[in-house]
Image 1 (tube, rainbow, N blue to C red):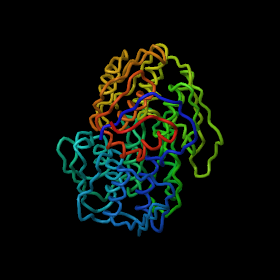
Image 2: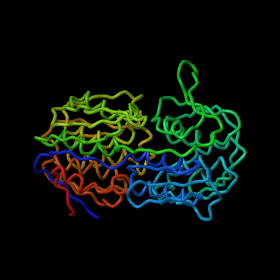
Image 3: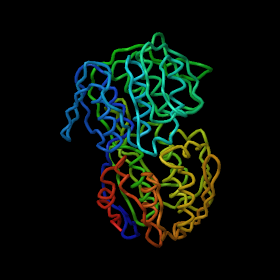
Image 4: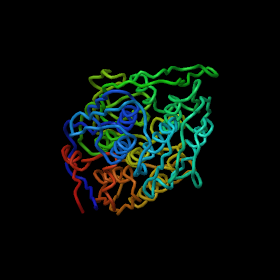
Length: 434
């Protein structure tokens, strides 16, 4: 489906985005590993998470989901699946489920769509193999078969800061002899560590070279009740739109504000964004707040590369905001963007140039030379290559550019933000089928 965004009236009002995707994936997986009845309030019903729900069923969990609170009933642990585990487009589902399955004496075949088949799985195959899992795979990509069980804990130094790698190793460590420690160059999002504690895992931290790193020992998880706040990565799109659309003032409600997920928001504040956190609270071991955003005069910035893990999913929308700022924004430390659903660096630069923005690729990022809020022409037809975040980012650009912007395939937006168009329309955005 083609979607077109055009400039119009200001964005105004309050709205809550869908539940956080990272927490939703983890809640379903841990619920399937735990004994008893886990209840998940606010679960994201999006294509990516639906794949994880289907996988949990295939591994033996009973799931009752009528659109309200989702209940997962499990005897505790994975059983041999009778079918291939289809992870669709979700790298999180694939890597976390492979890690969890590695701890059990079973053989499971994992696959995904063509985009996911191109993404590297070696980053989890390597540590899990060190722990004792065996893999049948070609070039460490999907499809692959994991043969699990009889694992030993390891101390693993990950070459990349990746919450998916960390989570795969820690989930495998729940079934490994000894202790498992994960060391990464920079801290990635810590939802797995927080949620493992809620489910009763034997997890803590150990200090190595003056830095704390997560450590887990063999543990039997117990059912828990999980509340899923709104996804800050989804909230980024209406917030960014409010910053660049003249006269806008929005309040995005119930947003997860975990410090390791706020890299974009820190960067926007440095750019001069009128952005505030309101009604902050912490009812679930994860901080939550409403985020208020108003139209702002922005300037270009150079966020530090060490911030990349806390904003890796938000670089596309940051690039769009940078196009409306005054001055150069230089994004580095983000080579991971080339290994997402698409090469997001190349796609964003190509799309920005098509919209009249001065943009340049870097090996690990990009440069956007903004010339102020009235400088972006728009008027382009954007090829998204099936990437939901690229599609949403350019639709936001179209809300503030001189001419409308069209994206070639909006169906994949449902992988992370079902109801995106209606959500944005509720705030006044002019987004509609082309």
